[in-house]
Length: 138
Image (cartoon, rainbow, N blue to C red; front, top):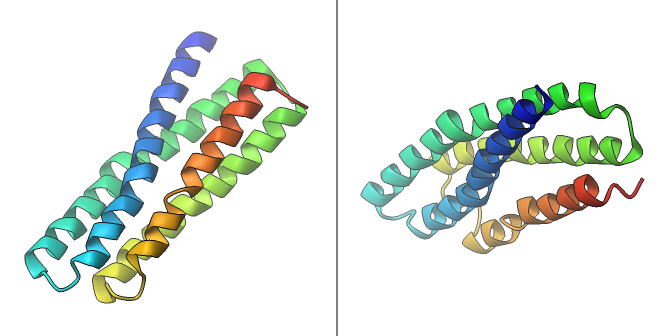
């Protein structure tokens, strides 16, 4: 059973990260096309569907299967650090959801440069999480 839970955990976090990498990029295009109604509406639809139909279910599945793996892994320092980073990642996910709603009403509130910077947050967290899981330094 452990292997199947691990497979489902990996599949779900890959889908989640795909969205975490892509949504801020859509925000870049959104801010750069704030004056183009048709493009902006298309991007708003894409952002909504990505968040609702891919990212939210993938995040929930990642948590569910990750919690299922704790039964097999037990308690360890690296795991506590990983969970802390996943909590931060989940907060970032929710922050992106808030931004998505703000962009609908105030598309010029943020700069495309801002979204290019925050697009690096999931990359840094992914690197740290992978190091913790593979190296298990604690």
